[in-house]
Amino acid sequence: MGCWPDYRLEKILNDGDKCKEGFTLWDVPVAKINTLNPADSAVTMYWEPTLILPFKTREVGYSYGLGTFAGSQGQGQLALTAGGSFAPSGKFTLTAYVSGHTSKDTLDLTIPEGFKLIEGSLKTSLRDSQSKYAITWKLKAPSSEGDFPFKIQSSKNFKEEIEIRIRKAILGGVFG
Image (tube, rainbow, N blue to C red):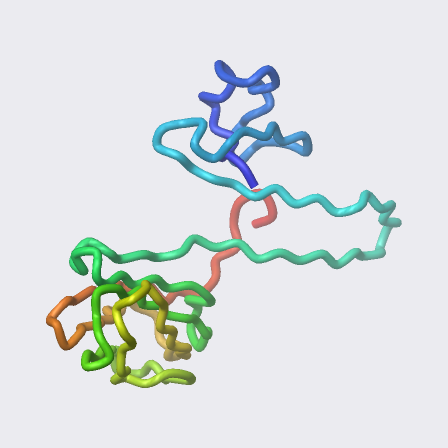
């Protein structure tokens, strides 16, 4: 894991001329994530080179995704992230980060119509404010596409909202 292979690294790294963003080839130069401003990251994965004969296959796999984060309204007391499959009927996780609450407080999750709560509760009792902690919910998306708002609100009236876009996977890029 390191800095995204941005063209601007050519002026910073000895082998920066290899940094071609999405067109960077096999030899990816490594730099710290915060080398550029704003910081951006990339993960490079290699598989053992293997000869693949005509009409034969080799199966490899990976998962890549961009997460979603909302924390501007929670005033340091509440934040919300989402990760997983945002495809129709996909499963994903919402995570709330909570601080400054007591065991007398609760957190309410509002989910859009058509989403199924697989794990967790729409109303959650919070713990003591001695530390920051996370609460997770597992959900299943509906079969339809669209942009859907998810809201959390604590009994102390801290709120956060995140919009999740459900879309069919689109093949593209080098392999599309």
